[in-house]
Length: 140
Ligand SMILES: [Zn+2]
Image 1 (cartoon, rainbow, N blue to C red):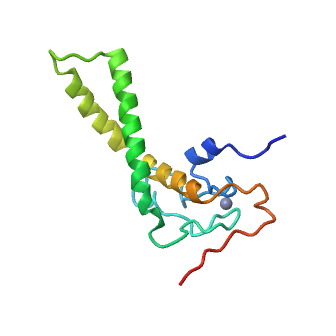
Image 2 (tube, protein in one colour):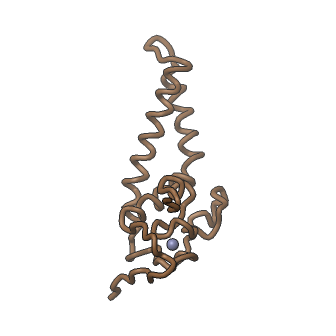
């Protein structure tokens, strides 16, 4: 039987992508705005270095952008289906404003989600993470 933790669930819970068990972030409180982005240096479960190289997480802006577009498309479709869109009134602009608020409220969560997706691009799941040591990147 396959007992590996789900890839998708580990992304949404911001788990280390090598073991899918340890937390990437020091706190689980997404809306503690002073500390919600503070990361563990190493995964507390498997020891994987979470910032593989300096500036490693700059690339998350691409992931964050894609998530924002996807969320906006989703709210637009939901708006279109439930409230409708028209060229003769302001319904589109109402969606625009409300979508902006929704994106703002989701931003802290999306920033963390972007980091866990980004890490999973570079660090693959290792079923033997308990016995095998995490790979050490070369540092100058
Ligand atoms: Zn780990």
